[in-house]
Length: 259
Image (tube, rainbow, N blue to C red; front, side, top):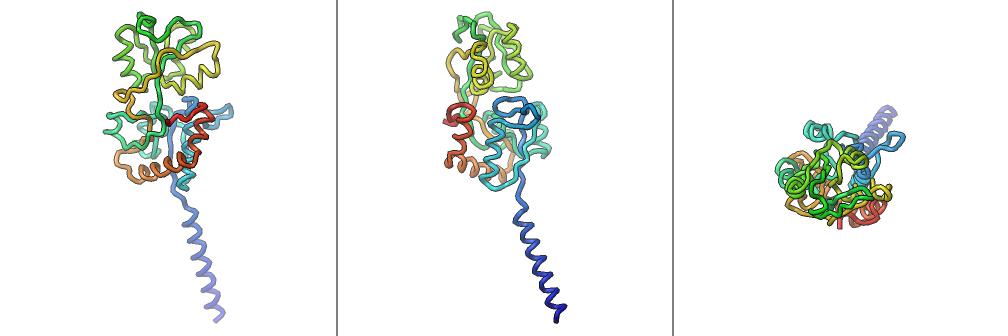
């Protein structure tokens, strides 16, 4: 009888332990982002990944109670990492263009960006065609919508110079190798104009043209990944309604960049 009771107790304990393990075993969302894309994703002096996209990703995971595995992946290896299953999502300002929507499942938008020119603070360029005639404009090679817009707009009167990273374009802007750089206004303002107002300024009109840039920027998943697509839609809705999205956006940009 004592042995039966002991076995019953052991069996109950095992059931409780198993139930606890199941309850504690959360899904893990593996997110990839470029570690040199300030302010969206970058590394601190001690090597920790941070930035707007990092904080948004963490908030999304918290909203749907999953574990976040956020990985620093250079832009040129990001698509391969997604397609191979190393990561489940790219959360790093990917424009929701028709081309991408055909190849990937996208959720969003979570950012409605504008694009603009940045020039040296002392430049006479005002963004007009006349002021840009004969000039050289830098653009990030991987930002295909920006490249296409530049080639179809600025290339009529200026030379377009592609760069692997926007940071390289800005370095050349500072040394006079290019006269202007065209890119994501949120990034250019935060990373350069806000930090170095005596060195850089934004000129011309802010561009938001869905023919080139789609309806905004979204989370990029493998084609047909309905599991994470559905959960990320719920998560985004939650952090927007709770005010968490606006809190993070205001911290980096002083405004809500989804409006």
